[in-house]
Image 1: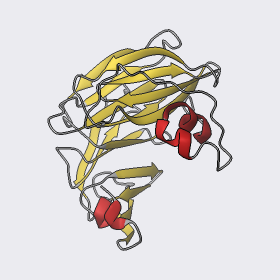
Image 2 (image 1 turned 135 degrees about the vertical axis):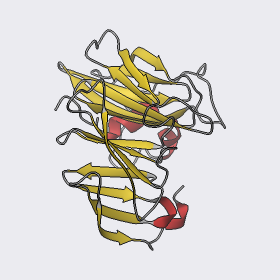
Image 3 (image 1 turned 180 degrees about the vertical axis):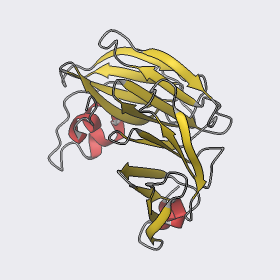
Image 4 (image 1 turned 120 degrees about the vertical axis):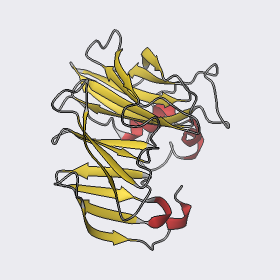
Length: 238
């Protein structure tokens, strides 16, 4: 696989400012470097909102979601992160999510009137730059989260405006720059806050409704395998 998550200590050390004073001296984590830009816009006091990792050609990259864009950093030298490029989203959003498939990055945003849809970015030009190859509202105009099962070549869309009570499944393996929709289905748990997929199974955090697991080997007809609807912290999920 071309992509991989960067180590948790590195990601926290580089970008999550709050934890610098609260967690970096414990839990076997050490601060290696810090990057911040006071000129970046904020929304409701928030500047940064998500992070992903990508590796190719012997180099490692951190991909950071901010209020109005997605930023790319070369972190091959963990002590000296270098910003190499950025992609404007077009809207200002508290929530962004990004996932990679081969050398492509797929991004979504979710906040009020956000109308960004799905952004597809070609990362094959790194370390010099990245290029937007498509931005489409065909499937949705905003979404809270996405996950890509790289082995299956499926992109799962959670919390979208067009399927708020379930999941949209896209095929990204056939033509990564032009995904096709396999299904848009409702699920018993309703709105999905976040999810993870592996093979025929998706694991869904349905927010206050709890945790559900589905067999989605047939993308158009998922089958609930089990659920956990009452546990500590359920009411804290938003």
